[in-house]
Image 1: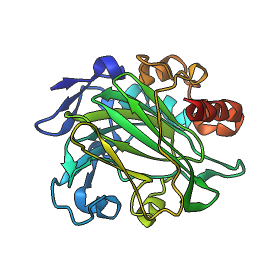
Image 2 (image 1 turned 45 degrees about the vertical axis):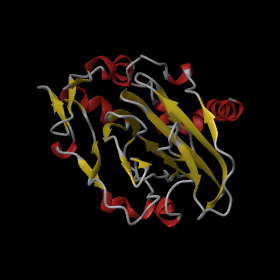
Image 3 (image 1 turned 90 degrees about the vertical axis):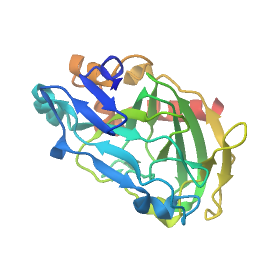
Length: 271
């Protein structure tokens, strides 16, 4: 049993044998059960679309919260999720999420941002920025390696995939604006992200996805703290919200924080 309380600020645990999240009394989640992503759901975006290893790849618990906090979270227009990604490989490719983009927020010219927090395990976040509305032509691609306690910002206009390169379950939380649907089709259309991460003899290997017309070199980055957004290693997301219900306003009003988003993107490029 993996105790997640210290990292998450919530009375949560993960049972690796049963592959399920443990809730203490007073906790709630949408529908009470996770959405499960299976290999068959992912065939189109895998390095080997004929692979047959593994079945259940990851679990998504939407709207996790203390019941007493639900009114405040709803008023803020947010949603807090927990995702657990199993370890292992599929034809040599590390288990990953399907990948998605966010739709634009009407009237802003920006897509919705998102923030992630590693609660357990290791994570590789693959971020990619397409040229205008051309999903097959990419302008920037970053790989951010994160450990427990680290926070990662997905800025506007970027799509992203999370990869588990470790030997244990990767468990992470995220805050995102509620009320919009993620866009999975661009990744399906391109049969995956810009790069596939495969297990190598000594280190992971990154294979360029040939279905893209333009893929820039992969830029590896360290986690970048963003103090203005309370993205500080070791400071639990959920606890930040409980202390300040407007702490994550930039997720619902990204147009008010364009300078900070741009500074973050420039720092990624310079790292």
